[in-house]
Image (cartoon, rainbow, N blue to C red):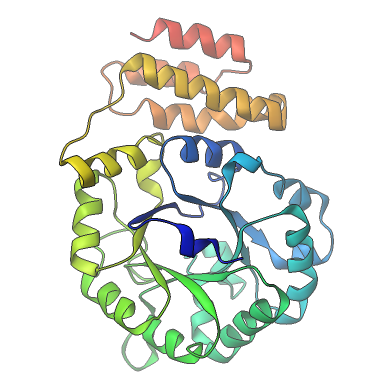
Length: 317
């Protein structure tokens, strides 16, 4: 049942990102070289109470596998039912979120703020491990708080050290840093030495060079790509090429357009017209950094159909 054992290292994972790593984009990333993909955060409470919208988010294409479903929440007693529902969909693994820094999540004492209550963290992890035969993983950050009130990933790992957690994805920044500053490579390396399972380093990886540096300085088993793949799913293959051959290439405009169109069609197939509306943010990301791109982004944010998208893409040269 533990698919992690079958993955070649270094493992390149698509990290969970709310509003981004939905089924269509996960499939695009798998086709672009990702070894494993994580879902958006799914609420434990919403699953327990059978939220129709949340249940729809569980649908995925079998070609995405291995795909890990990430859960967030703070009520361990709800986990057995929530996980049972997840298992029925055929996911490859379960991940628990202890790292999200979003204000809305932290305000409800979820995500990275859970680290302030290590006993509760343990209850959540233990409940998950006891509720499934699927491999359980966790995602967190280096620390939260300052001075005597600081809680670190090492405190967290010590608390759960006897539980059968298979994988740790560690964002190399504190809660207070959010997404700024260089990741703390030394702390990730220390966590790798402390944790017996697989460690995926996360944070600040925006290029193949960043990926190589992260792997070399941390000794991690792999990396989790997040904001660096916004509009650049091909970064996975570029990293693989760079690690294997020492060089990589950028996709041509025609190759980009082909990927974008496939992405849009997958969105439309799964979500109907709303899928094209959701695609607008991706279109703006895809066309960052091009001369004259601003003019086309104005058009992309008004696209409502595949035909309109095709027309706009044809105009972009």
